[in-house]
Amino acid sequence: MSSDAFTLAERPTRIGKARVAWTVASLIPAIFLLVLFALSFFAAPEHDDFCIATEFARSGLVATVVNLYNQLSGRVVPFVLLQIPAAIASATGISVVLAYSLTMAAGAIAFLTGTSFAIARTRPPIAGPHLVFLALGFAAAVVGATPSIRDLLYWLPAFACYVPPALASILILGECVRALDRESEFSARATWAMVIVGFLGALCNEFTGVWLVVMIVSSLSARHFFGQKLQIDRHALIAIAILIGWLIVVTAKSNSVRMAGISGSGDLARSLHDGLRVSLAGLRRFFRDPAIIGWFATVAALSLTDQMRPASARAALLALGVTVVCLACCYFEYFVHAFSTGGPLVERAQNQALIFILFGLTLSLSLAIRACRAKFRWPRGLRETDASHSAALPVVLAVVTAVTLYLSPTASLLRREGSELYPYWRESVARDSLLSTSREEVVVVSQHRWKPEILMTADVSIATSCVASYYGKTKVVPVDPDP
Image (tube, rainbow, N blue to C red; front, side, top):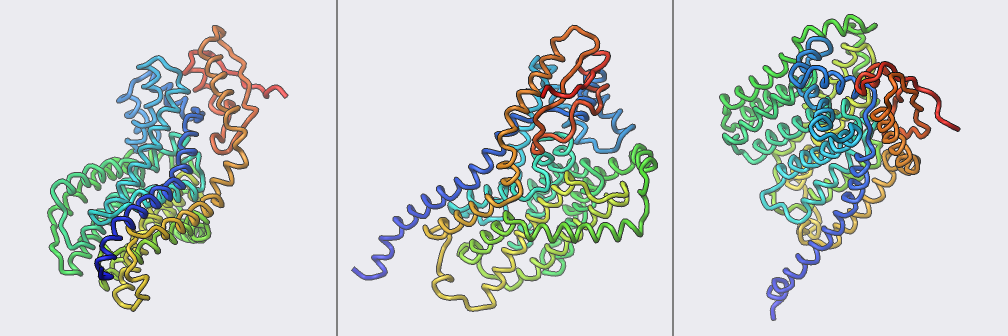
């Protein structure tokens, strides 16, 4: 039997072993995510949540959105999402604590679904068994590196304002880069999907609309540079939808009222300087994070061994363009926050920057390595390795992923506070039961004895009037917990 025939006979066995290896490797980020997603059921409403719930009980969904738009800010989509726990509790009769937990669990699933879809769209049509590992690995890297896991997964006001627009941003960026890389056009379905996603994303906060318009304009410019069909009409349709959503947010009169009451806001020169200083500090932390390092190592290894996409010298220019767009957009977020609040970007808003910059640099790294494959001669063994047929590669990457996720800030925080999570949840449930069943107009409520940073930052002593109003009490009196 010839060596070629022997190799062909051996191929199905190699593929089968590789699939098993990739499946086992996928368990590493899957378990990490499962543990942290399960903690969503320990999440409990805090001060802002009770204020929104009270407004919903008093005015209903639409009127609450209108009131908040006129009094607080123009963030329409978050105002709708913030009312979900109260709406569930009202419709089903379950406690608001359970409704809140279910809402955050659904949010965690939406986060994983959105990031996985974005990763999948950037891969070849038949990406091989490592696609699940990649999708789970990206989500795990975000969760591991987040500056605040609570704001990312367990506190609805933070999640609603910054996670949905982050997902909208990576979906549209991925679609633009995918079309440019493959020299393809926006289909009618993809165009309308980006119109809807872009419009809703722009309604989430003050800077996402600018991000999305920059991406669309950059896509059109890149098409002109590379000599591809421009599709001006479809780019314009997407951009117009985004601009409409953004204008709804920024023209709300409540924005100027809020800024007028914040000391230090509106200083252009200082905002430009502080935005650059704080964003560079954040970028340094980003590149030093173990979860980020492990993720980029994974992307580099898979890009080097990806035989399904041809090497392309043109990909280098596309990689550079994506990097510039992502860095510019993230700086703009830091600048806008400094200009509107007078302070550095808060951790909940940093989560949006983290998701976007990690996704963008993932695309850039993959494109850059493909460009290098076209320019340089790599060792034959590496050049002929196919990620979908290798059983050794997933083992190595599983070890790298496990070590870097274990060393991540989120994992360290979980190890430190793990014993406090269940007692905190028990206290939250007991408090809700007391306030729901007590017939007293003035209720004395014990503050939390257990205060895990993963799940909370403020106790019942904040916004007691909202808590009292939601439960139909005249007053809630917080006291120190029993020793």
